Amino acid sequence: MKPSTSTPDTQPWFPLEERPICCVPKPFIEVEQLSLHYGQTRAFHDVTLAINQGCITALVGPSGCGKTSFLSSLNRLTDLIPGCRLSGRIRLDGLDVLAPQTDVIHLRRRVGMIFQKPNPFPLSIRKNLEFPLREHGLRDRERLSSTIETGLRDVGLWDEVKDRLDSPALALSGGQQQRLCIARALVLSPDVLLMDEPCSALDPLSSGVVEDLIVGLRGRYTVLIVTHNLAQARRIADYAALFWVQNGAGELIEAGTAKQIFENSREPLTAAYVSGMRG
Amino acid sequence: MVNTLERHRDGREWLASTLVWIAAALVTATFCWLLGDILWHGLSHISWTFLTAPPQNAGREGGIGPILVSTALILGVCLGVSVPIGVGTAILLAEFTTDANLFGRLTRRSLDVLSGVPSIVLGLFGNAFFCKTLGLGFSILSGGLTLACMVLPVLIRSTEEGFRAVPTGYRLSAAALGLSRTTTLVHLLLPAAVPGLLVGLVLGVGRAMAETAALIFTSGYVDRMPESLLDSGRALSLHIFDLSMNVPGGDANAYASALVLVVLLFAINGTASWLAGHWLHRRIVTI
Image (cartoon, rainbow over the protein chains, first blue to last red):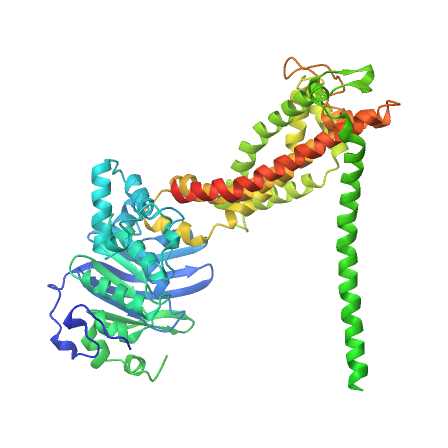
C-alpha cells in the first residue's frame, strides 16, 4: 500500500477519530427512495442517503451493485441511456434534480464528473479547458487564460505543461490526463464532484498524486467518490456508504461516518466487507 | 511416424500458402494488366490539346475538353446535393436514433436496398422523375441528381460508421461538462467522424465517376461545351463507352480518355487519404 504524501491527516491506517471534522454536517444532496431501471432490469432500488456539504463521501461495494449508476443519476447523465428510468427524489441544494423542468445543462455545470478512464478531448491541453468555458459564456481572452492557469495550478499540472499548452492532451501520461480532466471540471466552478473510480486506471504513483489532489478538494467541494480500493476509502473519506447486490438489484446497506463504517458498523455484511472477509 | 506427420503438415502448410499467394498474385496481375494496357495504348495520345480541345469527327479526333467540364459539373451537382443530405441522415441515424427505433431501422433497410439497385434502373428512374416529371430534361442537373441518389447510400452508411466509431467517453464527458448536444456534435463528433465521411466520399465519387448507365438516360450524349446546368453534357465514362462501342476508329481516343479517368480516380483517392492522414489530424488537435 502506497503511503500518502501530502498532509499528515491522510496517512494510512491512522485512528479515524483523530481526523478533524471537515465541516459542520449539513446535507447538500438529499436522495430519497431513488430507484433506477434499465428496461426491465433493476440497477439499484430504494436508496435514501444524505450527502454532506464540503465532505468526501466514499461509495464502496462489489462490482455491479449500482454505485456508478447511482453516481450518474445525480447529474442525470442516465438521461443519455435509452430505456433508463429513475424514480424517487433527489434534492441538490434545494433544486429538484429529477423534475422535468430542471435545466440539465445548468445542473451538470454545478455537478462535475470524473470518469474511471481519463477522457480528455482530442484537442490541445489549452482547448480542453477553454472549450467548455467558452460554451458556458466566458469569452474574454484575459480571463480565459487566467482561469485556465488557476485550474491547472489547482491540480498541480501547471508547472508540468505550461510550456506546451498547445500540444495534444492525449500525449500526456494517464495520471496527467486524469488531472487535466479534474481541472476541466473544476474551472466550471461546480459545487459537487462525482468521481467514478478516478484512480483505478492509473499506475500507483499517479494514483497517489490524484488521491492527494482529491484530499485537497475537501471543504471547497462536495465530493462523492466510487472506489474499489478500501484502503483508499479509509484514507480519504469522511463518510462512507456500502452498496450490495440483493435480490438481483443494488441496495444501500449502510451509510455513516467513515469511522462508523470501517470500525463500528451495525450491519454484519459491512463488517465482513471492510475487514476483507467478503467481496 | 514422426517424419510422416511432419511431412504431411509441411505439405499442408505449403499448399495453403501457395493458394493464398496465387490468389493475391491474380488480383495484382489483373490490375497491372489493365493499367498497363491503358497506359500502353493511351499515353501517346495525351497532350494539353487533348485535355482542352473539343472532340471532332464524333470523337475520333480532337480532345475531351467539354467532356471534362461536363463531368466536373455532374460530379459537383452530385456532391453538392448528397453531402449535406448524407451527413444529416448519418447524424440522425448514429446520434438520435437507437438500434431499436423503427424509423431508424426503416431508413437503414431502405438504404441497403437502394445501394443494391442496378444503375440502369436508377437511370430509368432519373429519366422518369428528374427529366420528365420535374421537367429538367436531358441535363447535367438531372444527371447529377440521379448520381446523388446512387451515391447517398454508401455515403450515409460510411459516415454513420464514422460517428459510431467515436468513443462513447467523449459524449459522456461532454454531457457531464454541461455541453449541449449541438455543441458536442459540431465541435467534437463531427471532426472525429470526418475520416468516415471521406471514405464514403471516395467510394461514392469513384462510383459516380465510373457511372455510365445511369447517365445515358439523364445527362445525355451531347459533347458540346455546356453553357448551364440545364444543358445536356457527356460524362467521361459515357464518352469512353461511346467511342469504343459506337464509333469505329475511336479506340485510340477511348484509351486516352480511360487513362484520364483512371488518373483522376487515383488523384481523388490519394487526396482523400492525405486529408484523412495529415490535415485532419492536425486540425482536430489544434482547433
